[in-house]
Length: 242
Image 1 (cartoon, one colour):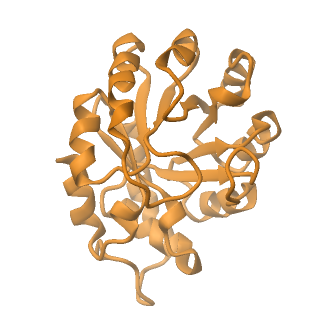
Image 2 (cartoon, one colour; image 1 turned 90 degrees about the horizontal axis):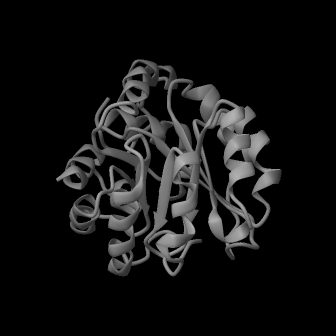
Image 3 (cartoon, one colour; image 1 turned 180 degrees about the horizontal axis):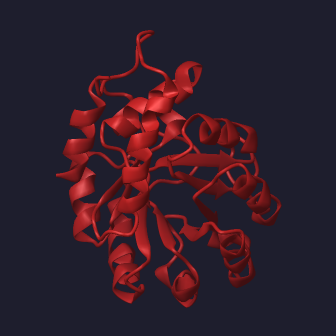
């Protein structure tokens, strides 16, 4: 398989399994991870496109879940997550809940095969119960924040989470311009977070902005059009890694 956008000659989806074992071991290593965001994939060939992104060097698949309330857009539900998990059982699904009522989504997505589940700090008074509920389901727990939310909103929960996700665009749509204003709080979160916590940047990440993200302490980059809109996924991912 090439690392380009798939064609009708793309191999069977089960060929991703050996790569999936590599992805699982990568999570425990202190290295930069890249998560292709399937929001920009070809939904007519979603699983094939995801296979190509993983074989091109992607480490996780980022799955944006939008409810039309917390953000104005609507996107995929647990059924798509379950279908991807069935097709690519070793791939790590990084589920980002951009929803107003995350407690309604956690168990369905855990059952659908999510490896990480991240919800927004803006929609809860106390994030601890949901973070603990996610971990109790055997899933890595993450907490996300919008660009205008201060770092202090996440800091009290760092010991309870596995992923701290910083939105570097206003959530809801791919293809937006990266907001460099989030970099100082990203550095503050990295400095305060335990070593096991992944600091994830999501929104407008491309080869140029990735450098600033890494310098601020990010070790997990979400990229949508920077990967899926390119002809050569492997080259795009190499550029993100710098």
